[in-house]
Length: 400
Image (tube, rainbow, N blue to C red; front, top):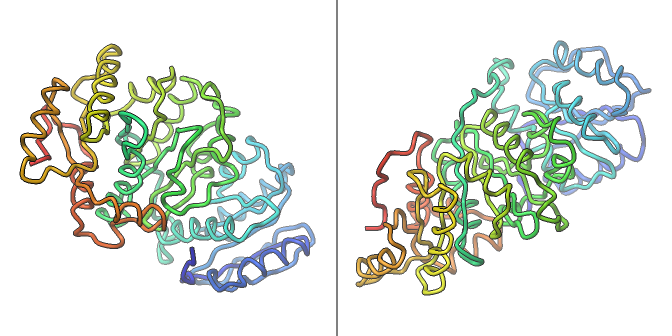
């Protein structure tokens, strides 16, 4: 995907010629601003940066605690308000955590790929926009207490990930960047959230977080996120299949707690299979969206999921049933009544059917909300994701 040139400059302090050449090559297609490269002798410059909107890249040794401390001091004083991206070879989870605590907004791991660099610069650019040039200290740490919405699919092909990715962008655009939104793709084996939004998963993503859950905090979580232009941060599923037992209930509980403390809205995509940790995710959610389709198989699978939710005491006021790709036509109400009778409960939301438009959005990585804010699916998702507020005891009917 070609990205338009960004409205800020980039200044890089590098040690090696290989990194200098990689930066020049990555910026060669015009999708990044010109990168001013300055070779250093292993020490950070001790002067303040020129005024203006810019981002700094710093090549350093992640195992050198003295160097990280010096970088933290520079960020706190001479470079206050300037987003800093670290270029660090083979950092461990603990070293990543140190870098994020030092104040860097992102980390790029050599060998440097153009897509990784563009993602990091875009992420830093969003941080620059939030900070503002006039008031670089604006934007304090997010308040805890964000809402967690978890999507549970009634079976393969229900369209749960489509609803989540498209709905996240709708919510982000509705609040015009004022809502911090995280999308956690916990489908370890078949997760597609990043793909549907045309995002490159971070090298330091979910798999790295799983390695040491005790060190997981807001800074480390942010470092693992891929940022979408709409403002949605995505924790992508691992590039390689992991066994379902790679995650534990303790890890998922910590992940959701940290995400809730860091973001206003946390959207969680689960695998189709039940695990002990998927139960933990559902139990820690403010809303549970059970996504099905209006087919015989879809309704039957939704019924089985409902039985499991009842068994685990999760079929309470948090649970909302979503009928995706609903094409009611003249007999819309009758079709709903038939489905509800079979399920033994009301359908709370319907997302209309437009397979071609959704397929185009997913295949190109261009969200429906960018193509048409008035599209019926965009309107339905706006109601479905809804404002960040406590769930009412009796949610309004959204299918009529």
